[in-house]
Length: 358
Image (cartoon, rainbow, N blue to C red; front, side, top):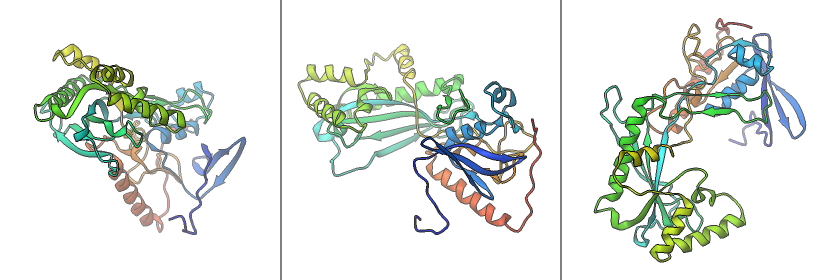
């Protein structure tokens, strides 16, 4: 791919905004270090994902007019759906120390070793709405193969969140609010899959293969140890040694690397675990497609932004509903279909769908 004559990859750059002339995109402003420059093109394709694609549109004046004006951003198109409708798969990672006989060989670099799709059978919920993933290696550091994860996840959530801006400055990270479990049925089903995960770990055929169970979130030491740097590598060796130490010392170590779970079977214990829900890398729905007269739609079925010519969004953000599976292959399918549609448009004149112009 890198040898293609029509491809140039620019690294160390941040896309600040899309440059518009009237109702047409003509380029992208990028920042490299303390310099800004504009790259002009006949058509602009935004593929920055479910978080940064809407953020780029918002910084470019495409979004809900009142919110953009409050940030001092000139409004090009009043399109309230930009950044709305955010969905993601939420997971509670039930982590445990693996006995030596159950550890994955270091020569195996596999991330997930198995998964299970489960139906909650809750009224109004689709089939295959729950998901369990089994991971026997947290990373390539010394502690990595001593810990395993059973990820209990909701794969057909009804809750929706948002992506918004705190500033028009491209260096300011957008505000991401997943609003996990804000829909009551999501909370009910999440309790169900977490309970199922704990029951599987406690099954007589599985229990001898592992020790205490604890929950890991991004701020947990077990996750931080995978970050680059000699300090984390050395600390990982210490944690690995503690995980192989006598039970009392090992239990002390587990309290440091995550939230130790005392499974008393109560509803209160499960509720406390739901507070540790975390997002996967599957954000969708923030630039969803739909008809031009739908104020929550951002792009049309050809991934063209409503009301702006020569501008498309092609990534997982255009999905109106999150898939009941990992989003990588569906995103590839979106891209392939969009490319096919673009090839078919070359002989046809471009039309710009109507939109509210501020």
